Length: 199
Image (cartoon, rainbow, N blue to C red; front, side, top):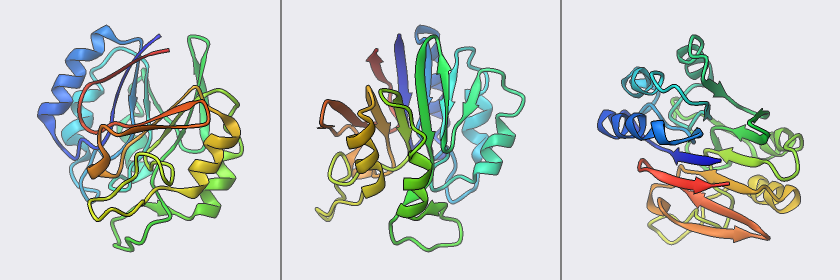
C-alpha cells in the first residue's frame, strides 16, 4: 500500500492542488488536520481535496471544528473523518484522533481536548493499526522553536502500548519533517508537503 500523507494546510490552496494531483499515485491519502485557520476558510482546501478519488483518512486539527469537517466531507464517498474511531481499507486498519491534546492555548477558536479525554478515546485503537493524530506524541517530533516539547503524553502512551505500524501527525510547525521512534513504531510529523510511505 502506498500512502500519501500531509498536515497543516491552513488554507494553502497551492499545496492542496499539489496533493490532489499527486493522489492519483496513492492507494490511500492521510490528512492529519488543520485545513482551516482559526476555524475560518475550511472550504479553501476541502473543495480541492474532495475531488480526489482515492480513499482518504482525515482528522480535525486544532484550527478545525469536527462538525464542520464532517459536514464538508458528507457527500464525498472517498473521505473518512475519524475521531476516536477506526476503519479498515484494503486489509489495513487505520485509527484517527484529532484536535490539540493538552496544550495551553485557550483561545475560543482552538479545538482541544484533555489528556484524559484523549487517553479514553485511544483505548479503542487496535494493535498494529496506522495511527493518525493531529497532535504529536510527547517527546517525539514535537519540538517547538523554544526548545520545549509540546506533544501529548496520552498519544505517547497509546503508541507505546498499541505499537502502531506507523504514526502520522502534525500540529507543531517547527517539527514538520521530524521523525522518531517509539518502540518499533515510526513517528512522522508531516507538514503541508508530499510525504510518501509504503506499507
